[in-house]
Image 1 (cartoon, rainbow, N blue to C red):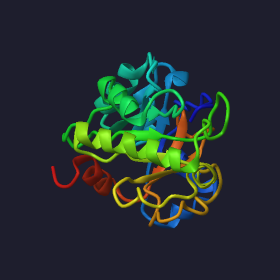
Image 2 (tube, helix red, strand yellow):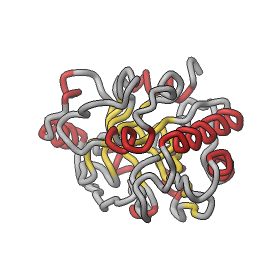
Image 3 (cartoon, one colour):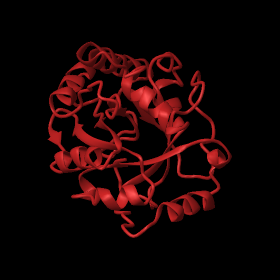
Length: 242
């Protein structure tokens, strides 16, 4: 997510969006999936009506990074997606060498990363991936990285009552956590892989919940799938029945 491209295609119809996705050879095309997107400050003000008409039904919006950055377009993106009927959530870009996990969870919750049981708000997501500013694993050992992630997840749960979704790539996860398997019992996996298949999952993950499959459309920002029907996404949003 750290290197987004502007990919808004405002004139797409729902059918066109589905055809475009089918053309990339998604393995989920034969199963029930729900299409959505994630955006950040790179996308600026998003035309959410156009995104809805293109077939997007959920959006994750960047809220924060480290303990020093808030997305200046967060309100327009977070509220705008909600107002057109999408299920929306916020995400935090982790900087593990720039403050503790608990401190960054607090910063996230304090700047848009909370949760409410309204049926349209997803649990917050921890975006933990390649370091765009330096060393791949931010200078942490594998055990140190696992401890940092645990501190973030535990504090987010304490503050909101929800376990955060984890966004990552399998390669980064193997390299920087030693392929740690202990978080997936609580945290949904949001896998990033720009390919025709999700590929190998991190150890212990029973499935992917979200799959970021493209950074070049059909939707603004990055395009994603939810591994299930829309009613199941609402269950995640509600943490059960609403």
